[in-house]
Picture 1 (spheres, rainbow, N blue to C red):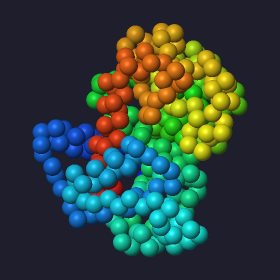
Picture 2 (cartoon, rainbow, N blue to C red):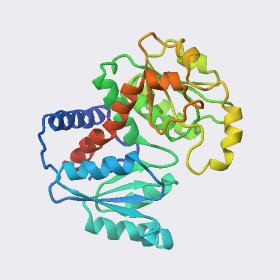
Picture 3 (tube, one colour):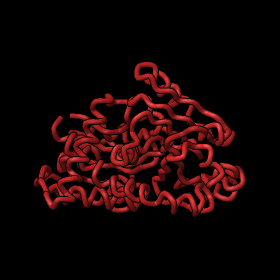
Picture 4 (cartoon, one colour):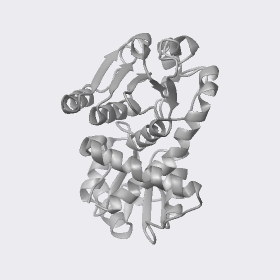
Length: 305
């Protein structure tokens, strides 16, 4: 049995295999072919953080694969009212075939997985968002720009940045991260990624200058400056992150055919300009749709382990 909590626990070959399964499922879907590979299986979905894409993609994905998804809000189950995580894990995993959790502390999902008798999927924590990166990389493969990637991440050193670091470290591509001073990536996670990168040949660098990161990049990506739980910091962050908007001026430093990715929701006029977002909207919404297909590939892969 395998859990999907971060890319640290997966080989390059396993990550690419998951992507390939997702792409095959997507191609079949476009042809009207539905293979019920998860027939009669149930996914328990625990949400301590709200979501649009995570809930819709997992719930729809289970349905299309012949299974069923259960939405479990922490307001509706005992986990949100004092029951120990390990007890909830043992109960839910005795009734479901897989569990997806979208929560705050990464330690919570690690504890749940330790006591779960079925695979646990990280739908997002404050430290990592690996299912989003599966969709991101699948999108680059589809758009035939997954070879010789030079990726630039511009913005907050958050869970998306950490997942980009781990994916780059595992797959062996170049990643440049630009954050404002004081908003850098977690030093421990960076150290882990750099250690993994020694084996894959990945190059991971950090800077406080967006232009340095974007110079010659083939992929430019960003995320909201204010994540869930940081709302009270919004106005302060807007001031500090000035100069980190991905706009025409910044994108001009990337390669002419560079792709722009955004995990959504996108706040135009903050982390990305209206012009850049609309210019690259096709690939951004392909990326959003691929949450559905990448996660189906992941769930099918997990059931075969």
